[in-house]
Amino acid sequence: MGIMIYNDDNHKNSNLLFMPFLSDWSDCMISLDEDRCQGCGLCVEACPKKILAIDRSRINKRGHAPVAVIDVKRCISCALCALMCPDVAIEVN
Ligand code: SF4
Ligand code: SF4
Image 1: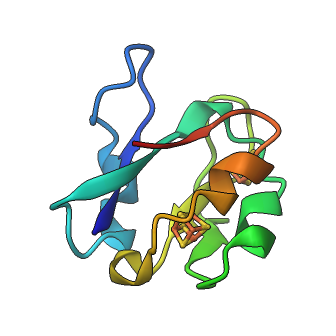
Image 2 (image 1 turned 60 degrees about the vertical axis):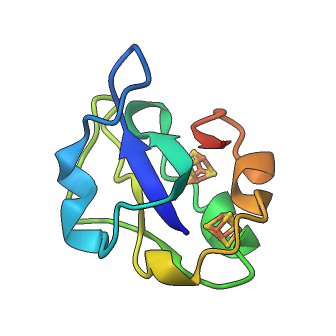
C-alpha cells in the first residue's frame, strides 16, 4: 500500500517533488493534485494514521505550502483525507 503524488493537468504520476517523503511507490492507492492544494491542513487533521503534513519547505503554483505524506507505509486507504479536501486535490483509487 502506498501513495502516488501527481500535479499535472492529465493527473499522471509525474510530481517528483514529493519524493523525499515517499519510501515506497509500489501499490499506489492515493494520488494528490498538488497544485490544487491550498495547504489548509484539513486532510492532515482527518488522517487517522497521522501520516500527512504540510510541507512548508515548498510552494505550489497557487502559492501555498502543499500537503505531503510522511509515512506512506502506514496508509490504510481510508480516503478520509480525500473526503475532507475542499479542493478535491486528493483521490483514492
Ligand atoms: S487514505 Fe486515510 S490513512 Fe491514507 S493518508 Fe488518507 S486519511 Fe491517511
Ligand atoms: S485538504 Fe486538500 S487543500 Fe487542504 S491541505 Fe489537504 S490536500 Fe491540500
